[in-house]
Amino acid sequence: MIGPKVLPTVSSLSAGIGVWLGSNYERWKRRDRFSKNNNTDSDIDSDRKLLDLSRVVVHASSTPVNRDGAIVPGQQPTPPTASNRLQEIMKYGYPGFDQIRSYDNFVLSYDRRHRNAHWVFEQLTPDNLKYDENVSRKSSSFKEDTSIHKYFRAAPQDYKGYKFDKGHLAAANNHRISQKVLDQTFLLSNISPQVGEGFNRGIWNGLEKYVRAVARKNKNVYVCTGPLYLPTPENGKLYVKYEVIGNNQVAVPTHFFKVLVIEDNSGQLELQSYVLPNQPIPNGVPLKTYFYPVDAIERAAGFLLFDKIPKRTFKKINGLKNS
Image 1 (cartoon, one colour):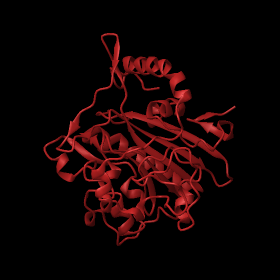
Image 2: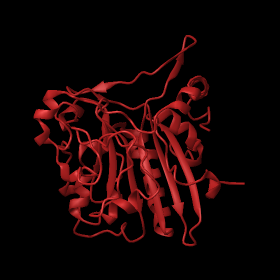
Image 3: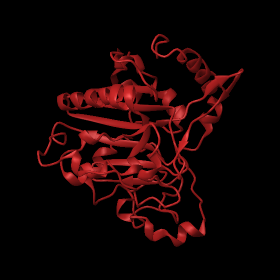
Image 4: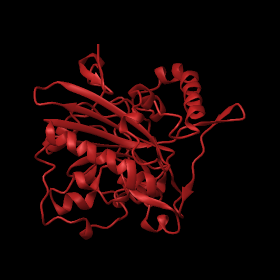
């Protein structure tokens, strides 16, 4: 749980989230596992050439897709034969199939409404975390993701004049195996507006370093990261409020989550799940302060995480022995 001494407003926030989650539980139990995408916008159809279909995870030859390249609801994709890397990253299941994009070393689902990702998935190992000394962040630059329709993507100028950093979801330093792979993490589909001092350049950076340290000591670490837009109580009611920036109205998330499945060298699994508020956090606050139940993250985000793994399989969940 998030301690009240760290963030004075968190006690009331947690209470509000609890009420909100409880009141919607039955609806969540009934929700479809797949998002529906019946978009028939003629502009999207006519601008189909803007989509780089080589980045779409599943191709029409193997899986039913709609006009926008999204998987038809209710259809399980046939595992791609052209990309063993894709199968490795997504071994434990897709949280959803909305606007999926596959890159060389990570996979994401894009949220066109908020101009952020829904989620970004990585699979980290000691081998793929090795640095090529010729690879440099200085050679990378933030760019529009042209596989996203022009109406729905963020642009670098959206951040100009605002206090927010361009915060990575799949961390850049996780992907220095080649310049091409590193450059892909700078596409704005992998970026969210984050408070800089005290968050992106503070505890969030510390969490990313922690993930790499864990990955270097274990066989595999599967990482899912994404934004959240959580409600806060006000005058006895709950409201979801967030800022938008730039001409493209890029949403500023209220929180971010990161969920890890750690596979040790003997094959045993551990789950760690975090939720951090997108605001300055004092130095020295332990990361475990931000452990958060994964089912609460799922309910707030609207998708399931690592649902191919029975919960009883984990030897530990958020630092505690799983009995």
